[in-house]
Image 1 (tube, rainbow, N blue to C red):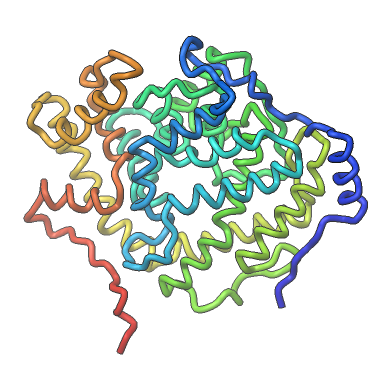
Image 2: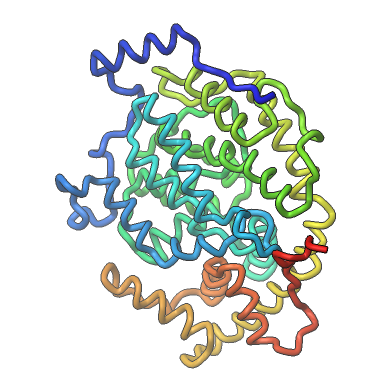
Length: 403
């Protein structure tokens, strides 16, 4: 029997009364806060307000197209029902917009942050992110986090003149770090943001301590967790990593995806409405923490999942990194790195900046390139560069379960 919580009658009456009186949401970020590096460009108008411009910039990026072949958790299964990032970011956006509507927040800002929050994510989910971080620290002495890279994709790589609240919300979205209470930490401008960004590249503690500058950014950060907790369980069942959900705790939050989304949504609205912060009740938050820990135990760190990544993707990524770094240092215009990455970046950002990406640090070029890859592109590139390598990916077919 599924358990669906509901808002208290008193709060529902209050929200309805506030709507009749035109009460604005506490802490709502106004469109006028959409500060840009180049204030002379991308000015809002009636049909393209400030944050709508950011949404459209994100939707039209090649990096957004690549969401379609970046898997969340299960990368070696041919199954169209298993979640890719293209669906994940839409689910985050939908959940956050639902809550944001009730709280009276800026829905365009929410959508921009949600749709852009994983643009810098690696192929092969968090395993791919972990392996690229190992390589970046070992070989280049820098930290790699997908949220940091997502902000870089928009601000530096494609130079899209995206607004400060969107960049900050994307930078600070880290859905692996849950909290019961989120209160925005406002920025005075791009100087504050740039210092925040640079600290993250050097200091893991700074990256872990990021807090969004807007209430909308705080909400998307929470909704990232809400979106994947139950969905990853559904995917694990489809990938035959789980038989059923009985191994998970129940309680007020529930086990199933629909329960989790509804009950966390209700708790967030109940404890955040009119307060200028994002919060949930203690019991629901404790249930969220238990659910996340159980997902790690039974899904993300399951032997069958971890072994496939560690024994294949990690050494493949090491080989690719070293070969691509050699190409970057050689500066050969006929190399794969140049033809598929450097030339692409220069052509895509020519309308916004004349800076030559070919002058970028070679390690950063390689990190940018690997992070940009889809799962299939990564596999194809490895086979192209190392055709005799014994490292191969064996996908589970649609029909493997048919006797």
